[in-house]
Image 1: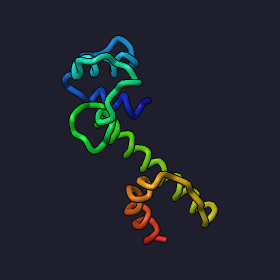
Image 2: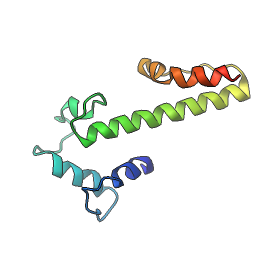
Image 3: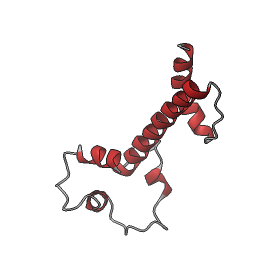
Image 4: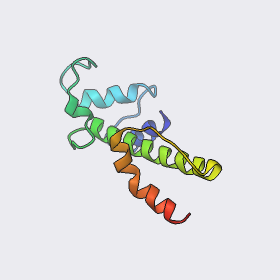
Length: 107
């Protein structure tokens, strides 16, 4: 939650919320006219490849944070155990390949 809050607080168009959990709702009310409902929320609003809304940016930031964390964990495991088996989603492999190749080139 800290990474998310830091990203969202950098938005100059926001007024300070009264509580940390109020921040996403404040943004939602500014950008969307339909009811906040997880069952009917449009898929394109959480697609990191779309540049339409703050929710898309949250997805991009979350994806970047996940990749960075996983690459760091894999590299630490490699230092300690020399062999690592990891199960991740297919898109994670593509996103992390360049960082892992660069790190393994130094080994």
